[in-house]
Length: 122
Image (tube, rainbow, N blue to C red; front, side):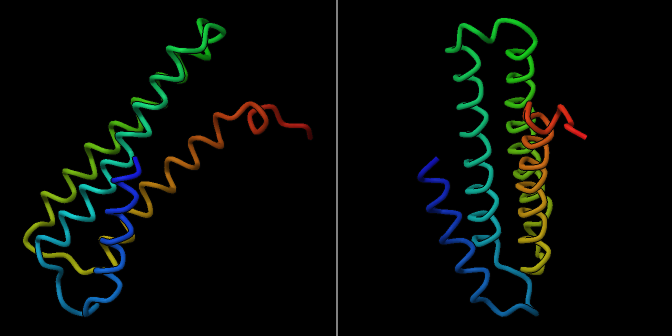
């Protein structure tokens, strides 16, 4: 996960400093997509490991942890597909927007599944 975050930071720096009106070179598109995918895949592996290691999660909570990990790994694969589809050229703002939307999706799903937010107090 650390390698993914480091590569993600480097790719964001390259993309932000590039000319915003010209399509990105394939190397920068791949750096962004692979680093984002690596972060999401590592998060999915951590979620699988935490579901297996906790003896209290043998009921539906354990199954929900596996669903969370499947979503993370599925998004990691979809980010790679987006990278493959946009290898011929994509504007920097669209690439960063798609990667940000994938991370925002993970955060929203995580907040939605959290017990504190699931049981409304109103």
